[in-house]
Length: 129
Image: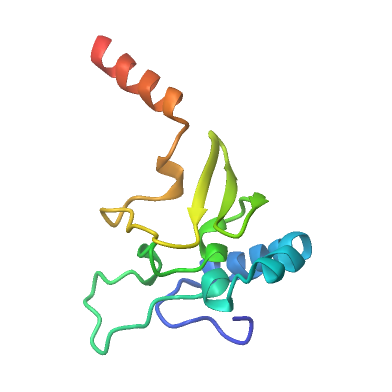
């Protein structure tokens, strides 16, 4: 991961992933190893198609990328054999190790998730205004 920027990944996202990987491993590396987290689950990327479309985004597949690529400067606050809990500006979000669903439209991101009570409050305020 450190030797060169992966194909179809922006340089700034790669540099952030290296920083996030170092921070994650310093804090959670031994526990991740004890729980059997694999290199692919932590650092993996989907394979690049032979002829990617112009709008292809390698980091858009939540179900195929490793945990470190999703951190983007955020930190893991809990790690179990089944999930990692990531601290976000609005609370936390869980990254599932197994049976990860795709997020949906390409513009979805961890930033779009808020604790359920905040999401409901936001929905209610839009209806009343």
